[in-house]
Image 1 (cartoon, rainbow, N blue to C red):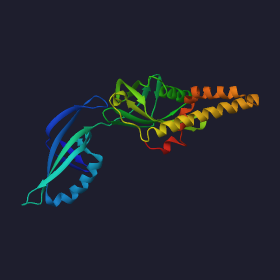
Image 2 (image 1 turned 135 degrees about the vertical axis):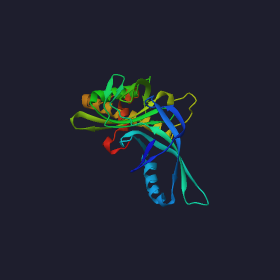
Image 3 (image 1 turned 90 degrees about the vertical axis):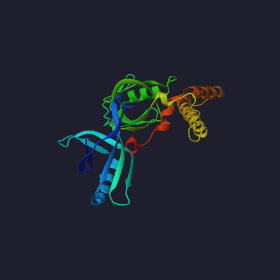
Image 4 (image 1 turned 120 degrees about the vertical axis):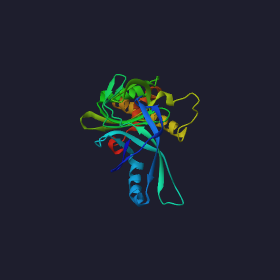
Length: 267
């Protein structure tokens, strides 16, 4: 096996090879152990290479130097003898994938992310930035507020198999030509478990404040419209508005998550 440590290529023999399935693509990946003896005169140069691969990983190359696979360092240690300044480095390496999304197919929507990241924490978690029209934005909000919060997602270019997911906290911003940018957070259904009793940060204060704020925004909007239309209100009309606001307040929930520009927010 020929491995590239930054600019240096070395030949090594892997040991304790194992295979596992990628949680993202379902493809078979490899992990293994590796030992390298570094002579004392080369230690300073090797330390520079080591700093690089700790951050960027180690690349397997063919005889022509072309990249075959990439590995991340899961664990690293070294040993030495009292009779020598040479060091033996031991690596635990795990194969990584270059994930490239083409499109996100969410129910009847086809989205093309311009920034994308997938992580795995007992379930797939997606963060993606997209530009959409108002009609698509309305559809995103409809799914966010649906009583059945889960929907089908296909990550075209990564895995053709649909998985059940839900939205996390999406933020959005309005721009010229009726374009809306979203930073979507999409979470696989198995992340949610029946025995998960954890609460969000500042529960229940933030949730109650959000509910009260939405109620008053809706109430004021409806009240202003009726003032313009009639000029004055009766007590019965005020009470009617209050009741209507309770029913329709979720219509304005999206404004809690509006920002000036999604592109100024990192994934």
